[in-house]
Picture 1 (tube, rainbow over the protein chains, first blue to last red):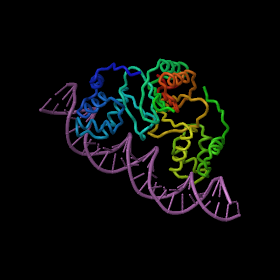
Picture 2 (tube, protein in one colour):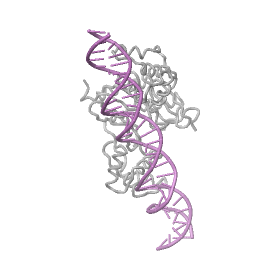
Picture 3 (tube, chains in turn red, brown, yellow, orange):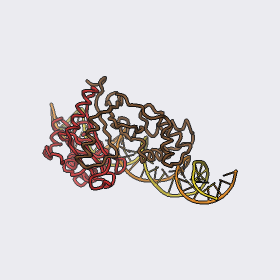
Picture 4 (cartoon, protein in one colour):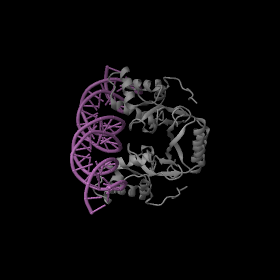
Length: 148
Length: 148
DNA sequence: TTCTTCTTGCGACCCAGTCGCAAGAAGAGG
DNA sequence: CCTCTTCTTGCGACTGGGTCGCAAGAAGAA
């Protein structure tokens, strides 16, 4: 059940421009890394890849840019069950929320979109009178190939 | 929708004993702190409270004991949307899984048990052939009192 | 081109969590 | 009650993710 690719690459830059946020070389590099990523990256991986595009990018600029994107609601921060250390992973926020399943044996991350998840969120908003900004469902266990 | 208190205090010690795990003074202190907690505690809070019961308890013993309890499936580790720093919070694992809602304004944590959540987990296990060990749903947003 | 305001790199720093080690304690078996 | 093995502990040093203050530099409006 793969995710739909509903957004055009390069869109992140436009979205920031629309909000009147200044564009700089390090930011362009970091945005480009996030947009072209084909798996979940953590801050140090983003730094390494961004430096290939702009060698002067600093660690703290990566963290500051990630904060900016989080505040703007353009990326989601994941833990992925802390399979590898304590850091966080990042991905672009597209239309639908999805569930992350992490295999405790092989480390594979599977994403899953579910109507039931959407119903659950509606139920929370209604029954608990809670206005949801971000919802994160992470599952740890054994994938089809690894379960015993 | 409060949680049912289905377990007797002191039970954690018994559960470890049943599994043939050695009991020691620092462990007794830490278990007692976790069992009598009335809110989610992080490692440093657990350390502080445990030291009131056994003043020699060390930081690393707290972390090692938390690891032990996690491996035994007796506690759950939570992020609570990282409202306060990067650390983790812990709570006893009782019968039913529940959802944690964190208010981004007042910091209040609300717990919620939902049949829909159970259905969602069943659906994952079935449709993705994924054997769930732990499922964590955390929601950030605005509680009834804080939403605008 | 100027000027304000935002962003950056740098370096120092903080905090959560981990590790290796030698000393100490649990508890099974006699 | 003692012995012996094995597990656990405190300690201290360390790692790694993330933050902060600052002075220099760049964006972009006018």
